[in-house]
Image 1 (cartoon, one colour):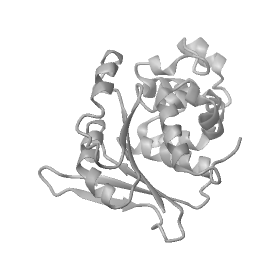
Image 2 (cartoon, helix red, strand yellow):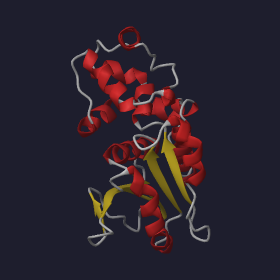
Image 3 (cartoon, one colour):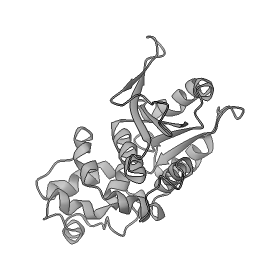
Image 4 (cartoon, one colour):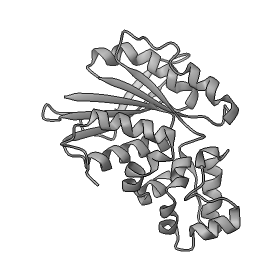
Length: 239
């Protein structure tokens, strides 16, 4: 059995990574489980696996997605669990965190330079992916989904009302993608919040996200590359 673990900053990333892997692999012989990590300073640290099926001996690929509950926690949790996960047979640990709200665009080079600081090179590979500025930039870029939220939400309407083009513009340059997404939805009287992210995930076109959008988003390109290298060609979707 091949095993891969993601350490992500929040619930939005959990849902997105789970859906992306499921769509790429069509859940063919892949077990995906969610979990979270809490505590560690004033209270005992707790790693809990939830909402998934236990991997059986017949499972060829196993993916665990852990919610670290905060962007500042991703690198810390990877460092804490690196040796343990190496001993449990995982082949790689992948962290995903947003740039904002702690950092700005100007901080990205410095932040990228520190991502591997403290990673034990003698253990299994561990990488941290930056979502610039946050995971919602990818949601914005998959602009076909707006009309599935509401038929009135065409790209032309969004351009006219808000002055940017989610279909062709560089969404990684947007300062607050989640706020942009909420403003887009508000045009049609709809709402976007972190608590309602499942509604957006459900209408995203993951074929486009997998096949086309990595050219527009560095973070997505890195994520897809990691998933592709983990899953064998026999499991990957074609077209």
